Length: 403
Ligand SMILES: *Cc1c(COP(=O)(O)O)cnc(C)c1O
Image 1 (cartoon, rainbow, N blue to C red):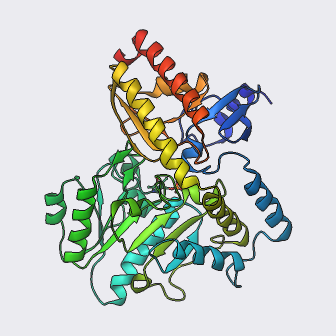
Image 2: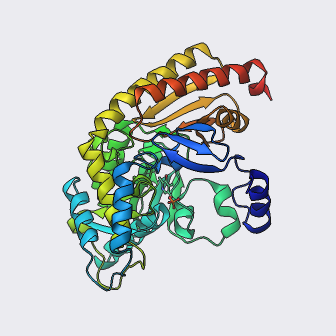
Image 3: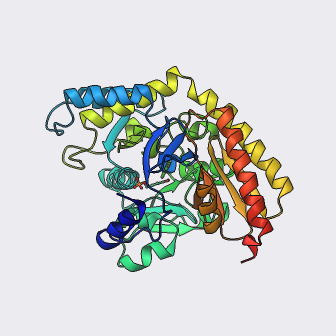
């Protein structure tokens, strides 16, 4: 099947929620590289949006997938599941949390966190249900998580939306003033990935934590994108010197196999039998793969790699910024990096892809986001910097940024 016939089939049968996609169909991948149907090679610097943490077809991940598929894929949670228990133990041992719940995506993890927040105050007999989130936040696409998201255009078609969410400016006084007797939690991302790779200030985040403690409300970090090594520590909260009550995980956790998680501290673990559930969540297959992802991150010392290589990449991009006036800002944490331009980057992003460098647009459409696999090496970084500089320079020269 050629590219054109695949696009035609898609247009006829697939609901067009993604608009015009980048017209490439990938056939296979290895490490940081993807290959299309003509065997053209691409540097994958977006990793399926921060998902393929170990790159493509990592030997140990592939072997774990085959091994587990040969043993057992799914049993339901009517029975005890060894890998589920082991993964819960591992995530708790490597964090400040005591309990885990597993689901299948980021939105589901955030949805689970929202339910947990409400159940926590319900069982205390307190009428606290409102959750404060920030402008430019992204928390998912279910009814509740899209309401928590800071973008009106995602919400408008779905009214009436669930009550109990307040989306406000990144201003500590405004946050403080928006707390009332019904406030239950403040939920934030430490780096707003979809919102434009906005790295929150350490002191701002610390102030938010203090507001939560002073008001006896929960402090929740959505680590769906920042977690599992992406920012240079296993969880990004570790870099902020904070102690949240709940975090959510998904994207990088399964290395491409769908799995999400909610982690919380013992005193917040308010779910009781019947309160929540999931048919697929935490099945023997997904949890085995997530365990392997965590083992590889540990045994291959990938966090050190993320820090070293992330620094190299960030510095390389900053050097390019100094030479190219259309670049407004370069920012990031670990291997989650954004380059902000003075105008829309949709065409530029397509041009980058056509020249063999895969990234994504984020923010208001003026940010190129990079999230390479955690296994990326110096050679791939230099190759990416080279392509990026050449393509951006060319695009600037032909007046692309003035359109
Ligand atoms: C991607 C993302 C989500 C939603 O995850 P899905 O798996 O697409 O449902 C939620 N929160 C954050 C911070 C994300 O980056």
